[in-house]
Image (cartoon, rainbow, N blue to C red):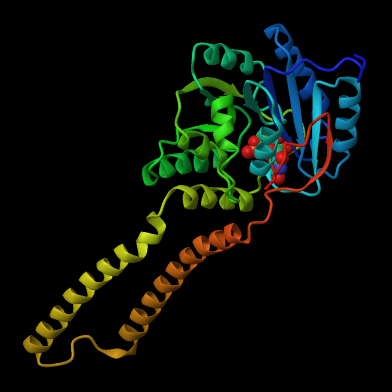
Length: 327
Ligand code: UDP
Ligand code: MG
């Protein structure tokens, strides 16, 4: 197709937002499949690729795709800002009446988007994908993910559905609210539930990656989990109080036992430095852990008060700059 500035594009009804980080092998095939899935829907759409600081040449490929098909738009970050921020930036720039967020690695099949659109037309304002089946993930990833989603559901006060990722379609109303939430350590799948509205889970089969490798090593997965928990729960902070009460109760019993033993036997029943040493080390480590938990929250508060922009745009192809977005 020809890129032609003289014929302005019709306003998109649908926006598809995809974060891309070093996906050289996949990005062409991804765009082809999204376009093939969206064309039969019969409404104008835009595909916004957010290049999250790729360094493998994905950027050049995306530029070529944009030149050939102006429905594909590209937002290039000045460096890597992370998956969740990339999704945020894409929704910031999206113009559609409904906005779909999808991973660019083809694990979320683009063919599911028209099914989401059907539900959106029925009046649902958020249609999120529920991973009914997951192909090609390690047993470790499946087990930790399942544990994490169940844990976060228990300890937070938002009903974050089990086994959902960021694959979802959101109505303009929802997106307009979502883009006003500018917290730095973002857990988008939580935020999009937190905003409320009429939500529906749509089961789908999550495929294996067709090429490339996961950009979420264990270290990033852990950070992501802590972001999710701290963003929606104070329970870890309250742990200090609970631990304090539990240890105080234990100490009270221990004092009584020590006194009774002394009275009964006449000798010092709890003897030796080992007892003292163990008690001091135990309490000391609990205190350090609690400090560490405080630190997790404190660091996140510090990031908020610095008020740095969420991301820095290096280049925008086919996108209008949306005012102060990025802040
Ligand atoms: N991604 C990104 N920035 C990052 C890491 C990942 O934009 O820092 C993109 C990546 O290109 C992919 C999506 O986010 O489109 C999901 O990442 P990935 O497939 O590596 O995560 P997984 O599916 O293994 O959890
Ligand atoms: Mg993936």
